[in-house]
Amino acid sequence: MRDYPNTEYGSEAVLGVPRTKISALIDTGEEDKAQGEITKLIVEQASNSDLGDTLYFLARRFERAKKCSINRYSKAMAIYRHVINNWPGSRDGSRARLDILKVPLLIAIETGNDSSVISELDQLIADNRGVSHMGHVISRIAEQYF
Image (cartoon, rainbow, N blue to C red; front, side, top):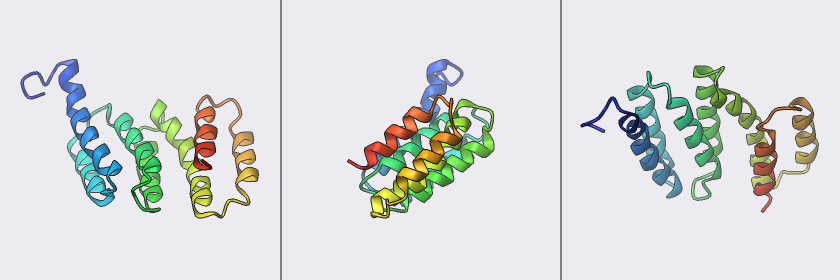
Protein backbone atom coordinates (compact mmCIF):
# COMPACT_ATOMS: atom_id res chain seq x y z
CA MET A 1 0.00 0.00 0.00
CA ARG A 2 2.76 2.46 0.95
CA ASP A 3 5.25 1.12 -1.57
CA TYR A 4 2.81 0.93 -4.49
CA PRO A 5 0.10 3.52 -3.80
CA ASN A 6 -0.70 4.23 -7.44
CA THR A 7 -1.31 0.65 -8.46
CA GLU A 8 -4.58 -1.27 -8.61
CA TYR A 9 -3.59 -3.31 -5.55
CA GLY A 10 -2.40 -0.29 -3.62
CA SER A 11 -5.71 1.45 -4.29
CA GLU A 12 -7.67 -1.61 -3.16
CA ALA A 13 -5.67 -1.84 0.06
CA VAL A 14 -6.38 1.80 0.90
CA LEU A 15 -10.03 0.84 1.46
CA GLY A 16 -9.63 -2.90 2.01
CA VAL A 17 -7.61 -2.64 5.20
CA PRO A 18 -10.01 -0.29 7.02
CA ARG A 19 -13.00 -2.21 5.61
CA THR A 20 -11.68 -5.41 7.21
CA LYS A 21 -10.94 -3.67 10.51
CA ILE A 22 -14.37 -2.03 10.65
CA SER A 23 -16.08 -5.29 9.70
CA ALA A 24 -14.35 -7.01 12.61
CA LEU A 25 -15.51 -4.28 15.00
CA ILE A 26 -19.08 -4.62 13.77
CA ASP A 27 -19.00 -8.42 13.98
CA THR A 28 -17.81 -8.30 17.59
CA GLY A 29 -20.48 -5.79 18.61
CA GLU A 30 -18.18 -2.80 18.97
CA GLU A 31 -20.53 -0.58 17.03
CA ASP A 32 -19.41 2.76 18.50
CA LYS A 33 -15.77 2.05 17.63
CA ALA A 34 -16.87 0.92 14.18
CA GLN A 35 -18.85 4.13 13.71
CA GLY A 36 -15.82 6.18 14.71
CA GLU A 37 -13.66 4.32 12.19
CA ILE A 38 -16.28 4.85 9.47
CA THR A 39 -16.32 8.59 10.18
CA LYS A 40 -12.52 8.64 9.99
CA LEU A 41 -12.60 6.66 6.73
CA ILE A 42 -15.10 9.10 5.19
CA VAL A 43 -12.88 12.05 6.06
CA GLU A 44 -9.62 10.43 4.95
CA GLN A 45 -10.96 8.91 1.72
CA ALA A 46 -13.55 11.51 0.69
CA SER A 47 -12.07 11.78 -2.81
CA ASN A 48 -11.76 8.02 -3.35
CA SER A 49 -14.23 6.99 -6.05
CA ASP A 50 -14.55 3.49 -4.53
CA LEU A 51 -15.61 4.75 -1.10
CA GLY A 52 -19.32 4.35 -1.91
CA ASP A 53 -18.89 0.63 -2.47
CA THR A 54 -17.02 0.21 0.82
CA LEU A 55 -19.61 2.19 2.76
CA TYR A 56 -22.47 0.27 1.17
CA PHE A 57 -20.78 -2.98 2.23
CA LEU A 58 -20.37 -1.68 5.80
CA ALA A 59 -24.01 -0.57 5.99
CA ARG A 60 -25.10 -4.08 5.04
CA ARG A 61 -22.66 -5.47 7.62
CA PHE A 62 -24.27 -3.33 10.35
CA GLU A 63 -27.70 -4.46 9.26
CA ARG A 64 -26.79 -8.14 9.76
CA ALA A 65 -24.69 -7.77 12.95
CA LYS A 66 -26.54 -9.72 15.60
CA LYS A 67 -24.01 -8.79 18.31
CA CYS A 68 -24.82 -5.10 17.89
CA SER A 69 -27.84 -3.42 19.45
CA ILE A 70 -31.06 -2.54 17.63
CA ASN A 71 -29.39 0.84 16.99
CA ARG A 72 -27.34 -0.89 14.29
CA TYR A 73 -30.24 -0.25 11.93
CA SER A 74 -30.07 3.52 12.42
CA LYS A 75 -26.33 3.33 11.79
CA ALA A 76 -26.95 1.34 8.59
CA MET A 77 -29.58 3.85 7.47
CA ALA A 78 -27.22 6.78 8.08
CA ILE A 79 -24.56 5.10 5.96
CA TYR A 80 -27.09 4.29 3.22
CA ARG A 81 -28.13 7.99 3.23
CA HIS A 82 -24.50 9.05 2.91
CA VAL A 83 -24.05 6.75 -0.10
CA ILE A 84 -27.31 8.00 -1.67
CA ASN A 85 -26.32 11.65 -1.18
CA ASN A 86 -22.73 11.31 -2.37
CA TRP A 87 -23.04 8.73 -5.17
CA PRO A 88 -26.65 9.19 -6.34
CA GLY A 89 -26.19 7.91 -9.90
CA SER A 90 -23.95 4.98 -9.00
CA ARG A 91 -24.88 1.33 -8.60
CA ASP A 92 -24.24 1.69 -4.85
CA GLY A 93 -26.49 4.73 -4.65
CA SER A 94 -29.28 2.85 -6.43
CA ARG A 95 -28.94 -0.18 -4.17
CA ALA A 96 -28.78 1.99 -1.06
CA ARG A 97 -32.00 3.79 -2.08
CA LEU A 98 -33.81 0.46 -2.11
CA ASP A 99 -32.06 -1.03 0.92
CA ILE A 100 -32.93 1.91 3.12
CA LEU A 101 -36.61 1.13 2.47
CA LYS A 102 -36.26 -2.40 3.84
CA VAL A 103 -34.69 -1.38 7.16
CA PRO A 104 -37.99 -0.46 8.89
CA LEU A 105 -39.32 -3.90 7.92
CA LEU A 106 -36.27 -5.58 9.43
CA ILE A 107 -36.74 -3.62 12.64
CA ALA A 108 -40.42 -4.57 12.79
CA ILE A 109 -39.58 -8.25 12.39
CA GLU A 110 -36.80 -8.18 14.98
CA THR A 111 -38.92 -6.37 17.56
CA GLY A 112 -41.95 -8.60 16.99
CA ASN A 113 -44.10 -5.80 15.53
CA ASP A 114 -44.38 -7.59 12.24
CA SER A 115 -48.14 -7.70 11.67
CA SER A 116 -47.95 -5.21 8.80
CA VAL A 117 -44.71 -6.45 7.22
CA ILE A 118 -46.39 -8.49 4.49
CA SER A 119 -48.57 -5.61 3.29
CA GLU A 120 -45.61 -3.20 3.45
CA LEU A 121 -43.46 -5.68 1.54
CA ASP A 122 -46.20 -6.05 -1.10
CA GLN A 123 -46.21 -2.27 -1.49
CA LEU A 124 -42.42 -2.12 -1.68
CA ILE A 125 -42.46 -4.74 -4.44
CA ALA A 126 -45.26 -2.95 -6.32
CA ASP A 127 -43.38 0.37 -6.13
CA ASN A 128 -40.13 -1.17 -7.39
CA ARG A 129 -41.15 -3.58 -10.14
CA GLY A 130 -38.31 -4.29 -12.52
CA VAL A 131 -35.57 -3.14 -10.15
CA SER A 132 -32.82 -5.74 -10.34
CA HIS A 133 -31.79 -5.40 -6.69
CA MET A 134 -35.32 -6.21 -5.48
CA GLY A 135 -34.54 -9.94 -5.24
CA HIS A 136 -31.84 -9.19 -2.68
CA VAL A 137 -34.22 -7.03 -0.66
CA ILE A 138 -36.91 -9.73 -0.56
CA SER A 139 -34.35 -12.37 0.35
CA ARG A 140 -32.95 -10.21 3.17
CA ILE A 141 -36.41 -9.64 4.64
CA ALA A 142 -37.12 -13.39 4.48
CA GLU A 143 -33.82 -14.10 6.25
CA GLN A 144 -34.88 -11.87 9.12
CA TYR A 145 -37.70 -14.26 9.96
CA PHE A 146 -35.23 -17.10 10.52
